[in-house]
Length: 153
Image (cartoon, rainbow, N blue to C red):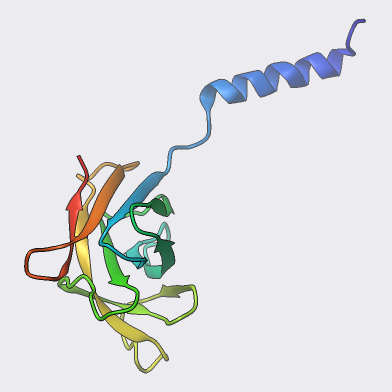
């Protein structure tokens, strides 16, 4: 059976698009070796140039989860992780807004409390300046009894 001409043109176009693929996005995966369920928030500069923080992603023990799929404009991600059931959390040098207990996406970094949000300290993760950087980090309990992050091998 011969297909109508327009059907074969559509098939060729779809084939060519599949060769090109979709635009590459950056991604960050978090692996939980912290001995309990953890909650993850991230911050980054979005494609419009605005600081943005969002969360929460849950990672069960010994589980890896994608915490970000997108294309941040900056050279860094910032990450904050809390372990459920105790006061352990990562402690970084960069303050961003978060909202508990619901999922959130917050634009802007100033006046968190005035806007009804909490402030948390985030850890910086360099992307090596690559536009479509993909990375994996591991959260664990350090010898000092704190949550810590290391890049996965």
